[in-house]
Length: 273
DNA sequence: CTAAATACCTGATGGC
DNA sequence: TGCCATCAGGTATTTA
Image (cartoon, rainbow, N blue to C red; front, side):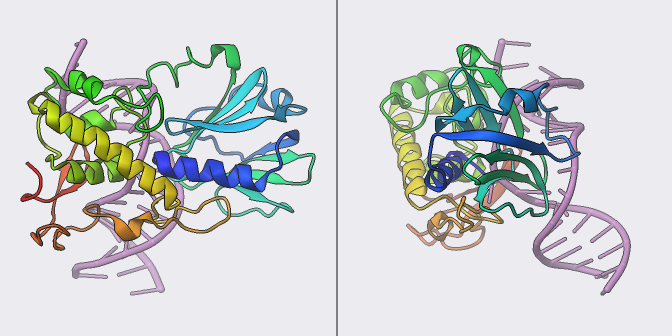
């Protein structure tokens, strides 16, 4: 489900639902583990804590509780929703009961997601955060020259390179294909063959695609829902993803598909070189 | 060191 | 209706 825009949509939904700050008065988890075991002493660590802010870094959702932060990665099918009163659904795995009467629920059918509790002072050095590259958007966002440098001498495909979170964060399988289409670069192109101009176009395309998707409330291919329970709208304007055999919006050539970097990949053989 | 394959899960879909 | 194979938006870990 979630690449950067979907995580951002979940974040906005929760902030909108809550009236921060909110105090945690209860915590429940299902009998099944997520991708990694829950941190120890999670319950005693969370009860009484106050959620001051909810933020996002890369594809991580971050609950800022002052001295501690609760970090949540949504994996492939993870999602948070707010309910009042509590109403459980299939695949609910974790919930936080708040003093206001509201409840936050983490749902994850495939359980590829995970949670961790960190001291804020150890946040940047943590195993989850320390290797992350720049965001694709914003004041400290990826610079074209830095992307260009990252591509030098790299034998891997440009698609694999932009999906590698050490180079730029937040770009997953859908937005990788989309960004490469708007930059006019073939997904299978060797990273080291990228020109400065292509690096510049790709940097711009990633920022535009991600920003636009955030404004549309994310993409819904299968089952993504925002905190209010409604779907995203970005899928209605996907240029290539999932459009195998359909005409390119620019040149009408049928869209190609093939597995690249281990994932379904879509491109136009005329518009992308 | 790099790059690619594997593993972790459940559910939806399509062919027979 | 059932059964089986395939695919699904991520990424840490293992293998080559």
